[in-house]
Length: 473
Image (tube, rainbow, N blue to C red; front, side):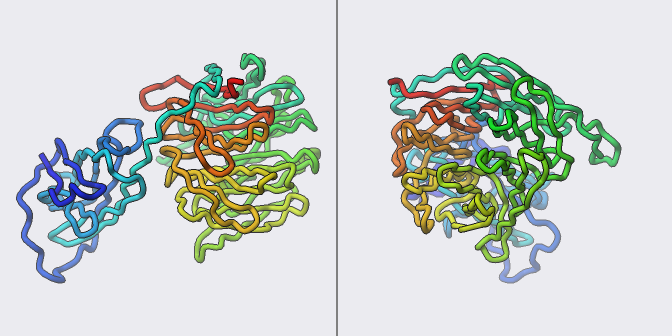
């Protein structure tokens, strides 16, 4: 049994360390000043929820896991200058440890730096304990939610006004992915009208150096081009994109692997006949000619963070503003691209955000809405200068965001909390709707309807859904 120091009861992390898998001796004597330092092994410490598939919440259980320490080495977890435990934790025969904590109900959400100090030899490792906000469900009666379960592994949805249809992508498992589908759903009934499994992908080399089956060109992101009656998808695992026909989901063009690095999102500018695909882990957006089905341009985005590289994640095209908004999950920035010239206008930092990943825009107020999964918040920026309008906690793992123009509401999907949070343009929460277990993506048809792609969680395998969310009146 490990107990936190009683002096912590007045601070955010005051708690009891409950049953632990490691032995805890009395507090070790101080190590000699400037003794031989650690040279070969550096320990690692991670924190996770004590409930599988759930975020770390105030009042909830936490597991501290360590590895890479010396067998028998003593480790003390420090919050500032205060040790969390009444005695050191001792690494087991494999150099690892596991300790269970219970956070107090008034623990403050945020990223808390914890230092793991090991002795004989001395070392210090900085670890991050993220406590997510516990945002309660609210105002559920204001919305009608329709739920269907068309397939497993849902990722994204996109609406076609031409066919009054919702296109959805799905992929199950890690490479080589063998189960993947592109689906067309009737927007009124959400019944599946058509579905297709992508073609086989080229073989790959396994970790053992042996050739492996390449699976299929699994589909993840999706964008609709009603002008050409096509659907564009991203094939993240093969670093490329593909184009399908809306009518029967037959393949029109499979672009070569390597065309877009870990392609994530794809959006369509029907006015100028262009498709934009984000290249995750790379500072670029790849532009395609939707008529000729060729690569037209590569837009390079320079980060404003010295020494860092912009990593394109979510993209959002605003037809009225003629702007493309690109989130960088590596540098916590938003790039604004003029789609008439395909040049970068601004790169704004997003203060108070880590893991920036989702982005949307309201042309009327010129506000940029940013979802950050590392800080569990919705940040609202002014489009003119990037200044912060609002910073709103919305729940664990804020992953995607979309602005709905008819209701003038912002919808945020939270990957960890399993909710869709509804806010106004000033960032104030007006509703928080259940979307368990994992709300992955949100899109809009521009007519007041929101479509949410919900994935399975750890304990809900197969419970993948498409939700249609609309105002109750």
